[in-house]
Length: 246
Figure 1 (cartoon, helix red, strand yellow):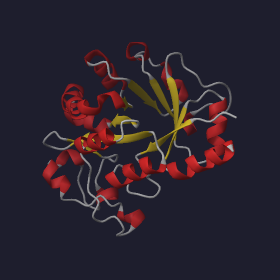
Figure 2 (cartoon, rainbow, N blue to C red):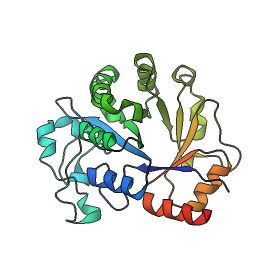
Figure 3 (tube, rainbow, N blue to C red):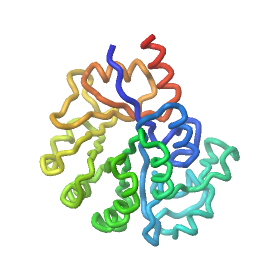
């Protein structure tokens, strides 16, 4: 029976505010050996973990990450109140430097660091690399840079030997003309953008599918050639797949 590796999507996001230290520590404690996080830059150029284009859903305030300094961002609660109420009101935004400290405490954990398109739009590809690569340097052997922006990945490939992952909404997008230049080690594809049947393979790259919450779906994908699946429900998925193996 085929079993894919699991990636904790934004940490243990089903139970903790996504991309926070609490979510990532809980994912690792549950047994995750791969985690995915999202990175943007503050107005003064510091990389922080954050997914959305605006702060409203996670922090309950208007504005965007790139409009606020790191100091201002650190003053916000990142407790995702609409989902968790006041349970995590003391949880703050996590800097990329803080995330790297967590990785160094867990050298067997690998991280997929997604550079968000909004950050690339605001700061440019070179500026992002200038800020992100030094921030992850202490744990760079544990990191892979991923992005929806193929232009960013092409720039990263020319600048540094770090592994790369191209992220797509649909399986057929992997045929983009930039892909031979990027030669990504990983290809991420949305579950809803996959063909209904057939093998899912790409020479030289491991295939990762997001977002999967059903162990039967995960196993079916593995039987088609998928190497890894991302899930918000890392503890539940790990437990279910382990039960299936016994």
